[in-house]
Image (tube, rainbow, N blue to C red):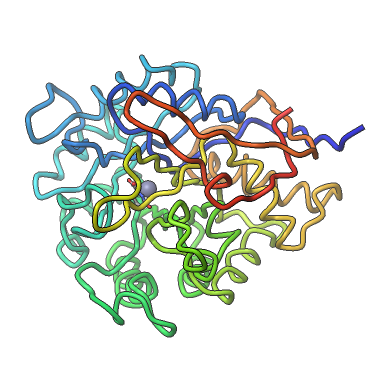
Length: 365
Ligand code: DOR
Ligand code: ZN
């Protein structure tokens, strides 16, 4: 009999469900992998930059985007958080009203032009000490941060000793904490030792999500054969960084690090002169996380190993966002499994393991 891990259903606290006809496929893939709820990113076109009210040509509201997702299958989830995209039009009043209505639970910082649909972002320096962050701090609204220094080029963007992420964590994060000591912060999809160390030593209301790909791979895997299905932002880093992420998640009793896949489907992944950033892990994320934690040295069949996995995947995230662990369960079985290319009306979406030729040895039971 194959080993079976029965776990509470998990929450993906950073994912992209996009817009249009494909939303239902992406949500279905999440449901199929034992996911009980999600934090769905607001980098649609136009961005989700209003809390409520009618959509405009330049912004959708959390209310209307949530409705789109609910109608596309997310009504089966027991949690669906859509963060507000922080733009030049965000006001403290939107934060206060959104917090009192319960619709607003988090806001998302995008570094301007730093990633997919991030052109509406406003540089971090302009937020620190300002009234929007003060209102978020006062109302317990979580700040989700894409932590990369914007507008760097070449060797300042990515270098052995310094990357856009490490620069951002060194320069900006200490200043955010100083100016807003009570602001709840999720450092999203962290990739570097610098970020992992920062989060570990920060107060308890600073947590982080980590993706499967950043636990499994390094930049060598990306460039050897230019495996572009592994291209996401922040880009996979070096061995020392992956080791730091692996230690962070496998440290028994840790409560700051949790699952957020950053599953980011692109139907036109390779473009004429480049590549869209994003790894699609719909349908296979818990299997990949299980493999990554084993590579980090955990024995998932031992009590401590299983507990560390469960904390990371199923319990730390809900505790951080302030909702209960799922009362339902799902199971992973130790046996070979495969992922198929998702064929959609808008084009194919290749899941990460297929792109990498990875053989999975965990399956959803
Ligand atoms: O790889 C990524 N893809 N990183 C991001 O920050 C955005 C995301 C997307 O929306 O495709
Ligand atoms: Zn993302």
